[in-house]
Length: 336
Ligand code: LMR
Image (cartoon, rainbow, N blue to C red):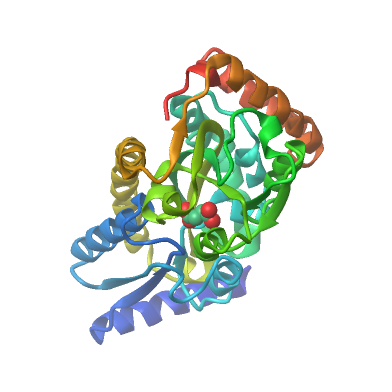
């Protein structure tokens, strides 16, 4: 403990010395998606806010489109300090905590209920668990609800039987596709469009903005507004790097992150709505909005996944989420 404190003090001195020598603190922020996504734009906003607020003492370098590391590599890169900041989807963080919770199908009736969980004690406890893995959590970012697409009309859950559907590396998402008698295929985001174009995959799930910005709608003939799951992100930093920064800098960067997060969430909502119109206007994908009765059949098919993962996620935690979201609406009436 004394040694750690001594080390912390030394690192702060090193920081001060490097500032004195006018060397900025560099934060490499790596992303697997385009800078045009809500996540990409918010990363750029954070860069601007952090650099302005520190008058250039901090330099944030944003690397989009998996330029540095792809889905499989980025967490290791963060833990080893090759990059300092990431915003992986909660699904990709699943192995490092109980983030699998957010992958459960039809868990959140709407965004309000989702944020009540994410920004409350449950979300805070999940971020805190990252510390033991050398990671410090700064914020949650949003990308909305996921919908199912394929080159085959999807109307009812039975239409998914035997289809090869791409998922992120999360056991809950694999189980979700198996509950539909589909074949889950784990693949990096950057490889999905090509695999769909070549027919290696039949379909995928994603929020509307990822489908549009990633041009996935150009290689998917059908989209059902199933809204069956959620895609959000945790903005995380290498803990050793973060702990080595002097506390005043923590305050400034945390404030920049609060503002970037507010911007990110508004943008995610707006871009989801715009992407819906743009996908329809592009004319390459037939968009099907299911009736409440059809949505009910999707819920019935997918809800057993909750029970399956209850033990792993923690029954108490799951019950806490059900309690928080109770009375906040139902998924049938959920907007995009
Ligand atoms: C995906 O792999 O589908 C998403 O996590 C991509 C992203 O980061 O939005």
